[in-house]
Image (cartoon, rainbow, N blue to C red; front, side, top):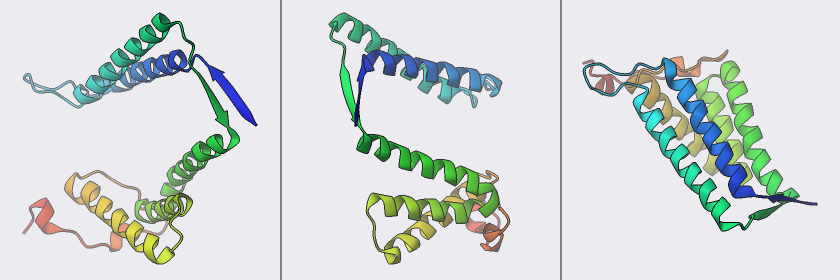
Length: 167
């Protein structure tokens, strides 16, 4: 089965403008900065303004060309999109139960399996290494709180005093 979507440039441009507007609205509560230095709202708004500007350019270009772009989406295309989105949604849902480290390992192993990595002897150590590295980057270096879950694996990991400046 194949679905045909017409005017994809116009639809895509409108969705990107809506995304940019959403980022602006979401970042309205972020601090603006003090004394001329950019705050937390600066970079999301720069990215949103860039996306919005390029989306408007895409929309104007598609109207000027008078050629409605059409794309055909097959069932295989829809599945190739839906499975990673479903894995991501399951990852977000599982994070509060399993914690950041275990949920990240499960997500990465599942995504690698879906992407064609058939050997668990290769995917599990890689996923574990990435999850632990992300844990240290976010929790120890950037001080971002991460969910521990019911099984607090992250509490079993040692602190890295060299990264946080504690001797």
